[in-house]
Image 1 (cartoon, rainbow, N blue to C red):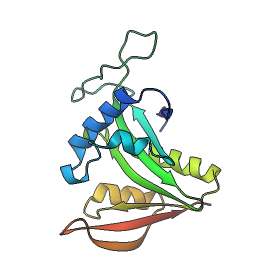
Image 2 (tube, one colour):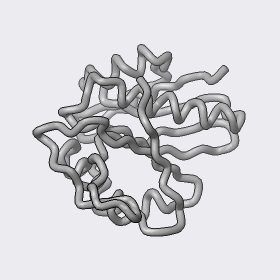
Image 3 (spheres, rainbow, N blue to C red):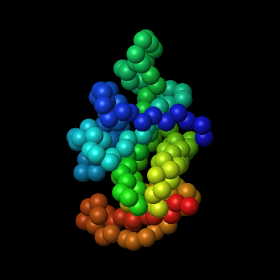
Image 4 (cartoon, one colour):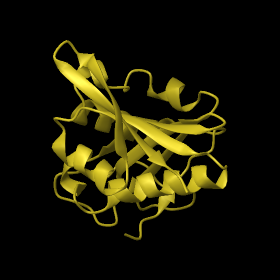
Length: 172
């Protein structure tokens, strides 16, 4: 899928983008899993990178944001997906990935993950890890399709009866 990925600069105002992503966080994740209340601090942490995609076409279930590019009067298309990741000297960690419900199954999540892998590969990172609730079947299957394999299981990771698996992708 050919999508335009955005990586906002650490300097400057991220507030409009953070507001859009926080709204998606609240919509998609249960309150105890949402970063919406501390998202700005999270993406401004050293070593953390945020990438996001905007819709190519507006969807009736999604209001366009009140955000415009400098010098333009038309609002930008809405943020429909984002990924947050960190990297150490050997391992990259995807800490959050989300795509608006109306835009799923259109390649946005794959494009975001592939962009992260490409970026980390350029930094000579050996692997990429993430945690996922295996009951989130679509996400789990997507990660497997992209080459991630289950490395370990973590009991009560999300909640007392919600477990996670740690998945790992070795980068060539």
